[in-house]
Image 1 (cartoon, rainbow, N blue to C red):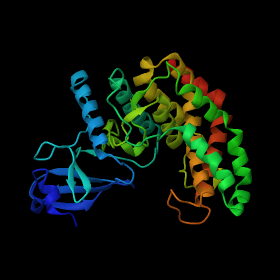
Image 2: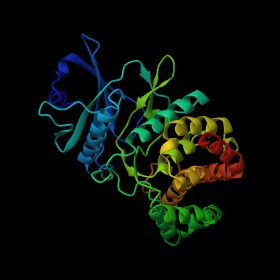
Image 3: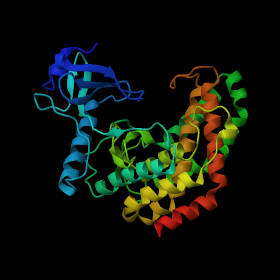
Image 4: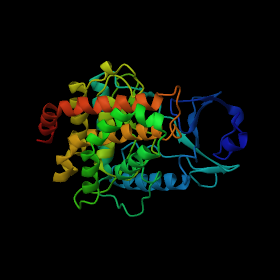
Length: 355
């Protein structure tokens, strides 16, 4: 039960609203407030401070982006929190942080790309955000989750986990470990790229799953990007790579029938078309040269994170059975292998939309 003081902090009377849990997110607690006597709707969220150690960094990053976008493109829909009655974007209550977000009417989200139009529209929205934020002063922005997509750190943790693992788990995962080590060039490439002058830091979304885009409920046209907690400095490969990882395969990272894991060329083309139509003109040559690498980067990083957790005894990702993280890692390895096998064909798709 929500304390009425939380709702009152944003100038609303809790008695005038019905409250229910909302959305499919797993990190923050999200509630929909629906007016009992009118059409008013708001989204209320409690920020998970176990994940986001400094909630005010989220608010500051969003405010800086919002101000920049308002000046550059006043018509662009960028969702920003509704301030409290004291003018703050977060309300602290009993050590927890809350925010109120406008509800965007006539919009929906989908949890997976069911057709190429959805993939195109979602990628276009993420590309538009990246394009509009190109040129913003990066210096004041901070990481909301430090090292979130730092493959160097993830690879080092993977290497450390191998000798430290219990013998039973290390032996069970021997072939999988060897397979991921065979792709270590992906981590080596990242190490070279991350300090390259022309492979610049950008304000990236960092969580470009399709359910982080609002679509028009009737036309399925993209409306805007949502869930901006991980809006922070990063590289182009983070956002593009996460789209490749989560849009092109017909099944999720939870799938245990590995024969179902394939790369759908038409979805890859749809997302590349949508993304590059928006952001393509802002890319440096080295960014363009590593667009296919983006998918390898993100799939590989997620795969070794699952395998690292399996070797460490499942201390990070929630599991439902003993081999859950092992299966997730094998799932991602299978997807990586499928992607690499089609590199020539998929690169030709990228080249088409770059030209």
